[in-house]
Each structure stands twice: as C-alpha cells, then as structure tokens.
Length: 248
Image (cartoon, rainbow, N blue to C red; front, side, top):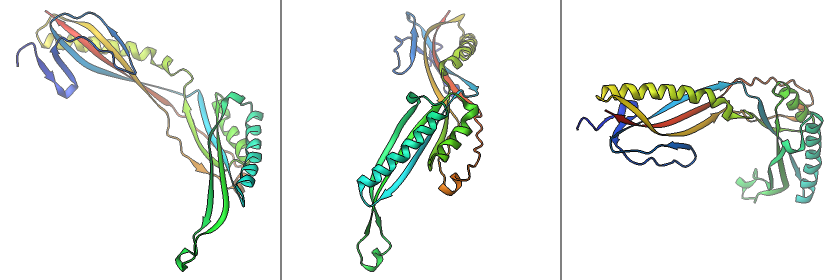
C-alpha cells in the first residue's frame, strides 16, 4: 500500500484515487470539480432533539351486526359522532383523515371440536380516523373527547415537528466544522498540506417517541378518565457524507 492510498476502517474513513462525485438518491449533493489525487471520504452524524409541536391520534369504532349493511350503518353513525367531537375540540376538517375501514364476517368456533361447523355470528366493521393537532398541551383533552364520543380503538399519539428541516440548520454548521477539522487532521497524518472539499451528500432521519397502541373499554370511557400525555422530545438525525481532495 503506497503513501497515496490507505483505509481507516475503524472510523469509517477512506482515502482513494479521485473519482467523479455521484449524487445519491434521496439526499442533497454539492459537488466541485475534481482532479487526479487521493480522495478522503467519511461521514459525520449530528442529532438534534426538540420538544414536538405536532401530534396525531388514531381513534376508531368497531360494530357487529347480523348483516353487513346494518354493521356499516351503525358504524357510520358512531364515526359521525367521533368526527363531530374532534371538530368541536377545534380540529379542522383537513386534519381529520380516515386511516382504515375493515368489514369482515365473524364466526363462533367453540363447537368446532365436536365436529360442528363454525357458527356464523354476523359482520364486523371497524373504522379509524387519524386526528392531527398542533396544540400539544391539549392532547389529553382531545383524547378524552374522542373516547367520550365512543372511540374504543385508540392508538398513538405520534409526535412530530411542523418543520423538521429547521431543526437541522445548526446541525449542518456543526457537521461542517467537525468534517473540516477531521479532514485537516487526516491530511496532516497522511503527509499532505491541506484538504479541499469535493462533495457533500446529506441524509436525515426523524425519530419520535414510539407510540403505544391501546384499546379502551366502553365502561372505562363512560367514566371520562383523564388521559395523561407527556410529549417528551423528538430527534432528527443529520448525516453528511464528505469527500475531500488531499493537496500537497
């Protein structure tokens, strides 16, 4: 291995012959012209954590009736009450979205061990809507209202940021500062005078607190139990992949 070619695998840093930079799908790439010479490649990660300013909750109703038409009709009436409760809490129509409707036959299999065929019970319909709000502090009251209106299948909340990219502005500067310092250090260790930036590719991943789906019994709903919700923090991870040309 010559002085112009080495690999530091432990830190994910590689030095190789210069090649044209290629943009990666799903990220942003900035590229400058390259000339012959060794290229230093590595990635820098920066994580930004912040209190969420947006959340969504899924709430739904399940109904069973002798016929599919009856089950769907009963479910529609129940869902209208659920949607009305959300709007009464100030949720706009565009922030209420149906996320799933399921219609399926139901059977009783208890007598199947005695050689009897399954007994048809009826049809079950489940319908769920997802409600999005920016009023994080009133999330518990919204959940209470949905449950009081008949919602028994609840999942979430899912926390997010209205503008996740804005979180990354300071992270980009920190990543560039770290990359420039690292590139200069590797150039010195490899016997070169400096390192010139050739390309940078950005990728990011948003991570919120994992939601905990749960179902609430109607008897509990009638007691108007107060929901306690803590939003915590959400994380946005920025990954920048750098290429530097080492200069003598």
